[in-house]
Image (cartoon, rainbow, N blue to C red):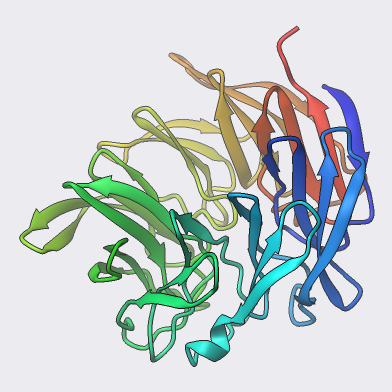
Length: 361
């Protein structure tokens, strides 16, 4: 596709951009600082601001994406500093060290959670002995509610989702050893399911659809869907099916009755899995493990080897219908997710952000 623009100088990082109105926001570790960048839709830098220190531990680089709400940006850095900034100019409005506030510890490869904005609240998962999930007032940073801890477990590397089931607003996410769900309005823990592995690395964001929530952990449990059932004030989660998918950084995309995702070790290729049964419907080795976004009947893929392209599901399988490679040289950590809006595909690899025109001719 035609390259519209590219921006360099973002530093190290795996966070994806977000596109809001006429602006693109993305983060990167530059020197000793975590830096937020704001660009216009032509790739011109409008401002940059800091949110604490860069991550200097194993796998240095920025982790989480920004979230936007009502003219403000919210970002959680790798060291647990949650900041609210004015989206117009990057000015800090407030900041909270969530690990310190909730007496939690950082994790081996650093906090990576993309924050969830739920109306007037910011949802964050500090984990630890005091709480599992907390809701903060998005205007002030004050604590609104906290959930009970889950066996004192630390947080993990995934991000929360918000959905409705049985007339209730629910949040699902992962700790280091469980997938869980809780009430979005009160923080009441409603269910938990085992997601243990030797590295305590649950990275993929859960998926929800048609009364089922899907978690995946590598090395052990792999992909599992759980059927939800309301039981009075509680909600039970019963395993519905298992899949050999062992997704890590790419999460997955649920399109109609099919879950599309890539494996990591056992199946380092793309699979289409029946959402009702867990049966593998499609296999496609054209791309290695990575992430995708769905639009216009196609999956736009960005794999960890730095190859981008399209997969199109049809009655005969999952067809590779295009590919290109923005990155030169050998690449093994293109872990940012692709972003697609208004016919523009945004791809990030560490120091560089590309914007491509993928509109139909």
